[in-house]
Amino acid sequence: LSLGQCEASIAGYRRAIALDPALAAAQAGLAAALLHSEAPQEALAAAEAALALAPDLAPALFARGTALAALGRGREAAAALHQAVAAAPANAPARLNLGNALVDLDLLEQAEAHIRAAIALDPALVPAHASLGFVLTAQGRLDQAIAACQAAIRLDPDCGQAHWNESAARLLAGDFALGFEKYEWRRRHDRFARRMPTPDGPAWTGQDLTGRTLLVSAEQGLGDTIQMSRYLKPLAARGARVQLACAAPLIPLFADLDGLEEAFPLQAPPAGTGSGQRPRQHDFWVDQMSLPRLFGTRPDCIPSPQGWLAADPARRAAWQARLPPGPRVGLVWAGNPLHSNDFRRSMPERFLAPILAIPGIRFVSLLVGRAPGAVTAHPAVLDAAPELTDFAATAALLAALDLVIAVDTSTAHLAGALGVPCWVMLPFAPDWRWMLSRPDDTPWYDSLRLFRQAAPGDWAGVSARIAAALARADWSARTVKAAPPIDHLRRQSIRT
Figure 1 (spheres, rainbow, N blue to C red):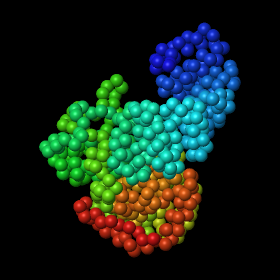
Figure 2 (spheres, rainbow, N blue to C red):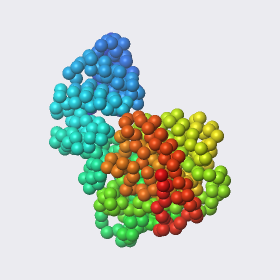
Figure 3 (cartoon, one colour):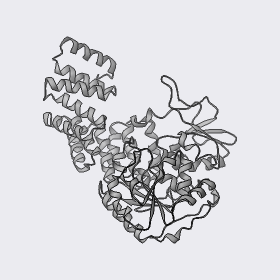
Figure 4 (cartoon, rainbow, N blue to C red):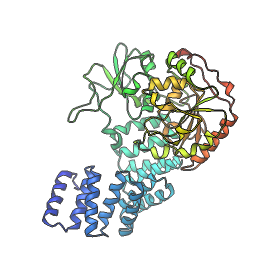
């Protein structure tokens, strides 16, 4: 196992268990090997088998907690890793994994204490320095976070996790130059590398694009794809014939996007094969999230912050005719439950109560991908989700609304790309693109206003400020008109 030969290690441990089923150390070793081979459910079973034989066996407690964390069972993981630390207080990896589990519970101060303890026990433990950088970033202590990441990089210059964590801290601080340079390390980070296919042919790194076909590969979330689609027109202006491989629900949205020659579905690579892209029909390819770096983007020169997409005028008009009179406000209070950060960015629906209590407003639920809750049964709420079959349909409805209120989801990015006013409810530790130096606005989208948590989990405070802003809103500030041409999108806002 120390040589990285996971399959041989698993086979050896299984043979030992067959020879002596009561050998708890063999079960614990099997759990460790299964964790290294990314089989956390099987690792959990092996760890529990070991603990049934030896309840205080420290390696088994460590393996059980680590497996539970990998399975997303955060509270159980933290409890198990507390036991592992109690059984072996000098075990630096146990301290580190406990700290990481506490991060997942938003217990940031406790997490920092355990991660620092791991570093004190083993100053050369590279992942501990990288994790400390993450925790400090989540607390908004960006200079310290960058220093922690750089400590990890001094120990291991190829630590993708440390470079990636440093990129987040730098981007949150508004350092786009170094932030996007470090962002390139995502291809060497376990979280992203396996999901980023490498298309055929050479990568585009700034070569002349005149008359050339450029394949832009979408990556990460739907919101990321929308956000970075602003670069497709500038690519076409450099002479490229631009193709976009992206998630299928986005393709209708981009059908008339100026500068895009063709969009087609991004498919997962077949098992045992290459990129998963269709046969090569391009001269160059580029990862979409690399475009800000390649264009030298800074906060003061982001392309099209006023918006660059337009909804279908006929579909927008149809929604305008159907929606009830009065201020029309869209609501999205939760995102994709499979998102790794969903427990932070999604707001429990009970916190919507102060917002829904504002009189005279007709709310429209835009929440898709989740079972309808009590909010959609509220008398002031129209549930539009069944009709939002793709992002072009969602764009038409957003363009007919006076305001969108959303957590950090693709809907917020879509509103910004359309130039529709949107109030974004952000967790205390936001995604890098929302920065920390801009309290209530963002250079990425003119029409977005940010409402940030004052402390981890402070949705009550966010909701109260949203409700107060709604109560003061001057709805005459935005006149609903036919969608303007894409080159003449105006900044639209609600005065509060």
